[in-house]
Length: 339
Image (tube, rainbow, N blue to C red; front, side, top):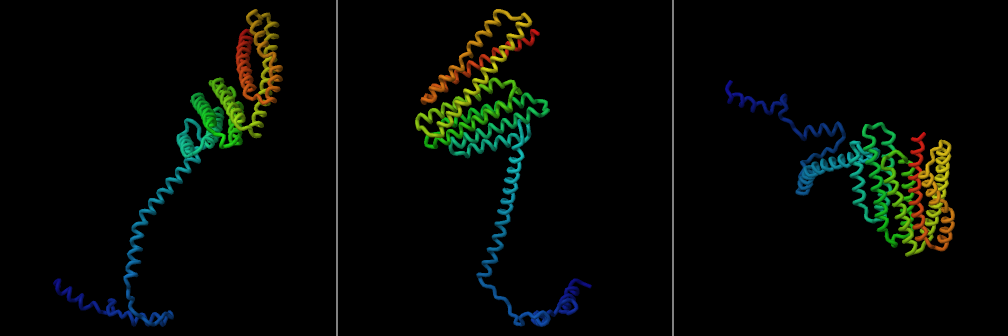
């Protein structure tokens, strides 16, 4: 059979009912509506320009929204992944894979913060995180434990200094309450430092000096605020600070006296007391013996409103105590090695 004959045969069969030809839409629809109770009237649908416009808009929106939806999905996934990484990174410490994410998040928070007061609060919060990191490292069995500990301590020191720097920029317009709350935040971090770091770092002396200096700067800031605009909040803070300082000084003096007595007893019992050591002990005792009288005198000045001069004297007393404690520690080491 030739191609022409095949084509002719196909054309002759196009309307054959057995092959689906001769289909009558209206007749078939009539049977369908009778069976399923549809409307019997059948008419061709006439499409208007409005129908065409809606169809084109629908197709166009799908073309546009599919890429937009894909981009939105990618954005959600990226953001969700970042948020998840940030949340996980909060538990990280120096040396961990996600620690840079934690630090980047903190820097972003500072950049987006508008005022010195808010930045100071953030730095105080970050200082607390550095302490937590130091504690986690100190309890770990990491091979580079000392190096990581140093990193955490240095970071803590940086945050404390940043708090005091920002605190200086907190204006009186932000109120005495803002100043005192920030000052109290620094005090809390200093107390946490003493509890967490202890003797676990080689830099403990240096960092302790930074913390003490920060506390003194904070107190000076509150004094200045109170001198410019006396408020109950600043007065109460200064009173609390004075009571804490004097209590601490008395305890340190008592402890030094006990340690010096033990040194004397040990050296005398071993006949190891020399003139140089004896003179060192006497000088140390003399340096701290009248601290009780000094504190009493300062209490009277404080009650009269001489806050600045009082805290300057307290700072001098703390320096003397620190030097005395260093001398006593050296004497104790000498006694131990002698025995």
